[in-house]
Image (cartoon, rainbow, N blue to C red; front, side, top):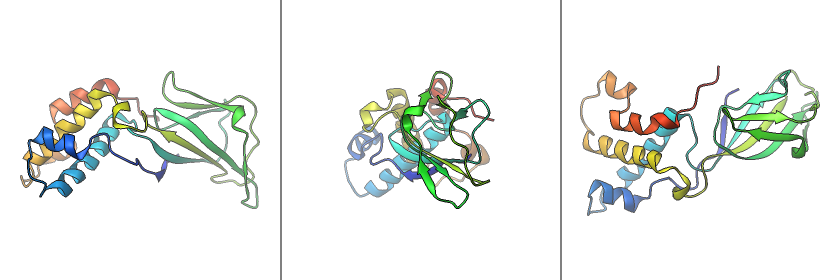
Length: 190
């Protein structure tokens, strides 16, 4: 199950002004670069922690319901379950009643089917699940250690731009960023 991004974050966990202050930039001539670094840092921290930082909407597709009616979600934290669609053999979707489902986030995000859901009519991708993931819709909802990891990463990239790329710089986060992310890492699903 590969998540499909339907709607990315409406804003970033760091503002341009606070990032410029962090970088000690007075002029605005590099604002586009700083904005690009903020977006890239959010993406890197999300990948390192396997968590969505700020509200974003995702779609997941399944072929069939698991036997235990527990769908392990590759995203967290889950804010809302937005829709569950089940496709018939002709490919027509029908919306499932969301009252028959709940999200369990005690050990990784899971969608639990409280009642036996109807089976899909088509063999491949017969089920679509739409969720909103993230810590919240505002920068203040993102835990401060993750915002700090972003600041550190933006500063690192800003200060080392143009340096020759080495394999270790591409595959590893700077130590301070990795340390800030470590408590927030969620286990990868098999």
